[in-house]
Image (cartoon, rainbow, N blue to C red; front, side, top):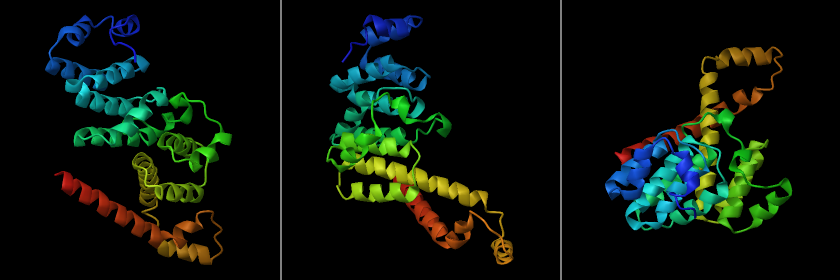
Amino acid sequence: MNNPYDNEFQNKFSENSELLEVLEVGTVKEKEHTLLNVALGGYDGEEVLELFTFYLTEPEMEAIAYMCIDKFLENYRQYPLLKVLPILIDGLEHEQESIRHHCESGLDNLVSPTKLKEEVLNFESFQIPFEYDSLQPSLNSDSAQEIIIALLYLYHHPHKNEDLFKILDDQLTKHIPAVNCISGAIIDTKLAHIIERINEIGELSLVSYTLAKSSGLKSKASWVYDRFDSINELAREHMKVIVAEDQESN
């Protein structure tokens, strides 16, 4: 792991001498504050990720380093996935609850970063060589890292939802914590899209739709009518989970 005080990092923050000084000689609290400012301040690049991972080796800075990695993944997309994925996987087993939480959130951000628009997301931004021929062998493995890479590849490439959900069902039976987290994030994102589509057609009268259909309407969206009740029920159950989680956190 690179030292954050090497030339590459110094060049990245050459115009911020105060930041460099705090990281080098500041107190723990000052360093924590500075790292969080870096995570939230719009800095990007592999050097920033290296900075956070460096501080994972210092016990008094470990928790804030995990938080900063989570915030980095929330706001930025171009990074080598293999530099951060093992950290998130191992962190799920950490004894500190706050660190486990930030690793779960970090894995969620691999699927759908909360601060980024969906159109900027793609698999290539993970900077990892992966071909379609590797997909099935990776899905068949018991390695959390291999499975997660395969799921991200599948999610960020054209796919049929029913095929994706079948694969997620199969992976969930393996009971691998990090894989469960990624699978949950994918399912949650897909459900959010379903709810958005339901909201978009909220003004549509089912009575009018039924009359039009009986009059010969040919629509590729006929599934909206046929599955409206089941999708609505799924959305309601999903909202119950969200509300319950909010109540627990409060």
